[in-house]
Image (cartoon, rainbow, N blue to C red; front, side, top):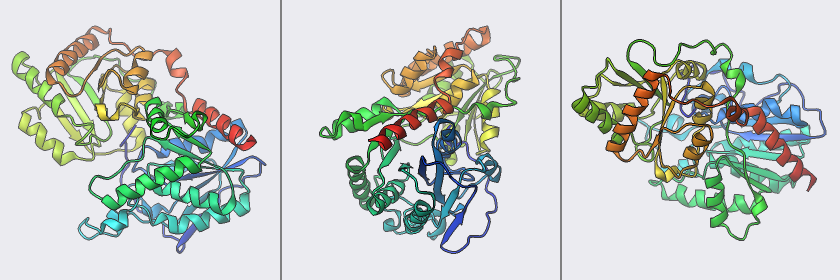
Length: 438
């Protein structure tokens, strides 16, 4: 669930330029070094959930993880409660890092070179020596590194060159290239090329992303590309089973949880559709309440909402903790997905939590996207392009009617079984076995 972020909290002091926290001890002969910038208590990106789940579930499938991550001072938003979810048996090594925008800027402006290849490039200065120390102590057989920070791939590649250990690149999605920083653009393209030629396996969360890279690098063997989707964590839903029924008294409550970018997830067509229904059918806040949670562009979206005259229907709300966001999702009458055609080869991580919440879903996405495919496989059919306000208005009105009548489809138990985080950990363990044995 992208953007379900926690509140800002005070962070503990650091122990010099390299902070090492050892929790437990990896003793198995089959140990893997997991490199992940986003890891608890980080709440800036939902990506920490993927790394956390792998570090917790891999031992069940024969691999003991050691985690190399960033100092907690590198995060602008944290939730210390999330640290309790890290298994005591998992060693966690935290290396010095700073965010250029948060810590090296003046009035949030900073030299573009400080964000090459990303805003947290300073992490490499501490992560490489900390990684070498972890490798000497725990003797891993393989390295796994995950982005969206390309710096994580730089760290993994450096450790691979220094130690000879094979490594797996967990792209999750294609490397994000900033349009306004030509140095970062060049660096990201160089890192992508070095990664796909240097890693033993490149992992993506959606088939479209894997196909994109296979087409971009046709000389790389097809077996190098692997898809391990995101998923939901069943333990996150403990205590959330007894939620109110869908379509009760009062206005219908639809929730979008996570970032709404001004490009690729722009809600303007949705706002126009709601304004059209308000003008033609008298739709009001007594009928519908839409909550946009943790958009990351609140002021921008608020201006658009006021301009459309729908501020009685659509609200922009601040970030909350991951658990609070899940409770809101499970208590909603319906859930919203917005994803433009430019992201057809990606599947938002929140999709899996939406499915597990077993609430009706309205997806504003291209019919040919990977997101639409996975929703249709789960029995969800309220899908419309996010670019056409008239089509959105018709589908939204029909979606609301289905909720009121109690016939809006939700994900089946059979579909959900395929998407658990534990099932994904088993997939990763299989890849680790293949690469290690090779």
